[in-house]
Image (cartoon, rainbow, N blue to C red; front, top):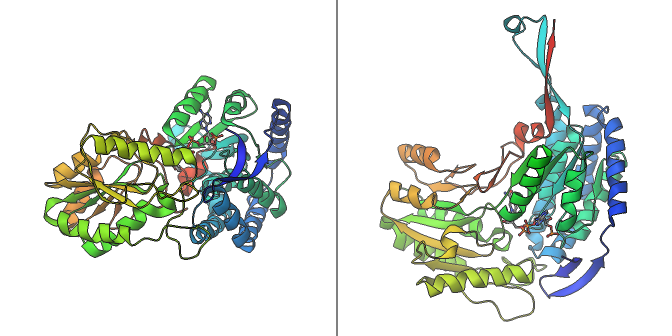
Length: 457
Ligand code: NAP
C-alpha cells in the first residue's frame, strides 16, 4: 500500500511519502539496539520526566495533531481532540505508576531455601509495534507509554494511511527529551514487517489490527520465539434485558456503534434485545441513529465523518448486499451517500440469520445489527456466536442477571450498564480471534518485561 495522506472526506491525495529502504530500516534497528543498552539504565524518575513532558507537548499541540488525524483518517475533529487529551492522560498515568508497577516483588525466601528471593521486572529491548489507523494516536501511546516507562525502546510501523500522525508521534517523544533512538517511526509497508520481526535485535512485537495481520505476525513471532501481544478485531455484543433503563441504553447504544465513524474494534456491533422490550428499544435506537449528522469531519457539529478509505466503504457495501440477499431488513440507512469521499450513513439492519457474513464477521462501519432474543440463555448464545471475544456490554438492573452475563460472556471485558471503552487503569484485550495478551494497567506494562526470578543463597 502506498504511504500517503489521502483525505477520506474528499478522496484526494494530499501528501505522498517514500518508504524506507531495507538499508535505512537496518540503520533504525541498529540505532534502537544501541539506544536500548543505555536507555535501560535510565531511572524511572528520568523516564517519568520525559513522559510527562510528552503529555504536556500533546496537550499544547492538541488542535494541530487533531487536525492531522482528521485529515488522514476522517474521525471528527471533536473526537480527534478528545483522543489527544486521552493520550496525554495515558502518558501521565504511566509516568506516575510505572515505578510501583515494576517494583521488585519479594517472595517467601524460607520456603525456597534462600536468604532472599524476589521477582524483578526488566525491559526486553527494542519492541516492534504495528499499529492501525483508527485511533492513530491512542493505539500507539497505549503501547509506547508503558513500554518506554519499562525501559524498552520502540519501533513503530504505523498504518500506511497515517504517515503524518506517525511522524508527529516520533517528534513528540524526541522533543520531550527521550534519547534519540528510544522511539522511532519507520515509514514502511506491511511487507517489510517480517524482516524486522525476524531480526534478532528486535526482542518482541505488538500488533493492533485485523485478524489476518495477527495470524501472520503471530506465526512469525512463534517461529522466532518472541513474545507478542495481539489486539485484533471484534464484533461486540450489546445485550438489553427487560429491566434495563431503555432510554439510557438506546442513547449509549448509538455512541457505542457510531464512535469513530463506526470503525472501532470495541464498538458494539450486535444489539441483542429481549423480545419484551425489543419494539421499544428499536424505536428509540433507530430514531437516534436517523438523527445523527453525517458530514465534513472538520465541522464541530458533525457526528459521523467518512470511512477511512475506499476499501472500507466497499467492504461495508458488500456486507450489506450479502445480508440483504439473504433476507435481512434495513430499518434506516443502508446506501452509500452520494458525495465526494467515502461516506456511509448510520444504518440499522435486522432479521439476521447465520448464513449472512455479518452474523459472524466484523463490519467496520456504522452498521448496527439488531437481534431479538427470548431470554438470557438465548442472548448469551447469540452474543457468543462469533469468532471474536473482545468487549461485551449488558444492560440490566437485576443483580443476579448481571452476574450471569459477567460469567457467561466469552470476551476480554464486560461492561454492565455502560459501553466498552479503554482506561489506563484497566487491562484491555481479547480472547478467541480477538487476540491475546493485555495492554494498559499493570498487565500492559509487564507484557514487555522479563519477569526475572532472583534467588540468593
Ligand atoms: P490491518 O489491515 O490489519 O492493519 C493494521 C496494521 O497492520 C497496519 O499498520 C498494516 O499496515 C499492518 N499490516 C496489515 N497486514 C499485515 C501483515 N500481513 N503483516 C504485517 N503487518 C500488516 O487492520 P485495519 O483494517 O487497518 O484496521 C482495522 C482492524 O483493526 C479491525 O479489525 C479492528 O477491529 C482492529 N483493531 C483492533 C483493536 C484492538 O485493540 N483489539 C484496536 C483497533 C483496531 P498497512 O497499513 O501498511 O497495510
